[in-house]
Image (cartoon, rainbow, N blue to C red):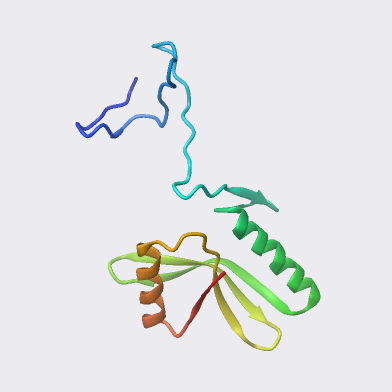
Length: 131
């Protein structure tokens, strides 16, 4: 109902719902949308994280701030790239010794990620560390 396929079998419009296998026709059921790398979204301190690993690193950073090792940190810092593209690093840490670290919490290194990371490092005076 309200969903069309453009000949390819993919949904081209309508709501993100569908029929479960064996469902009664005419009764719509919501289909769960899963991350293609099986990452589980997590909400912590009212902040939504893309994965459990990223949320865990956030907790580690909070402890490091309490210990005085990290002065403060930022999340999802954008870098503008050519072609109207934007890359966001997961965290920027400002350490008590004056260092600044750019951190990406990665589970899977995709081709797109590797390409954008190289572009950022070529255009900006930063080195992105993968955790």
